[in-house]
Image (cartoon, rainbow, N blue to C red; front, side):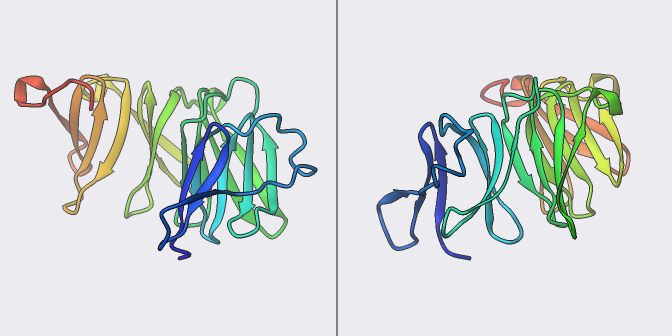
Length: 212
């Protein structure tokens, strides 16, 4: 809505106005951010209220996009790094993919509740690389170990046993016809949610490289 382009890097968060060719660093008040020793940003997301969420040097933070005011901060749990994906769902929940599971930051009357989904919940994916929400509300997670589909509080994991071409998943995308496409280290997979079957494409089918 502001027309700003946001970028995260090794020295903080930067933005570019719509009609400008210059980037500016978003100032972060030093007192509030004192636990953060460096400002290395691995990923960014904009939530439903246009606040910025960032994985910033060992912490998840939410900040006001205009002022840089700190709205929320919590440290990574042990084993969570690296954080490679942040995504805002339609219900306003902010999802984060980490090395050992997925975090859901849910907003409610009493503030933000952090929920972790990992091995204790039967979620065995590691090194989450992609987060995607379907039109029907299904939330997809891709990483090392296949892809997982969340529907409400339950999830289903798809791996090579179910026909996926590789258990190392990279991007996930749903096209205008409703077909789910999954990029892997061994090519591209097409998933039909009605039949629950995969069709896999590789370099033998004309792809230029096995990594998609």
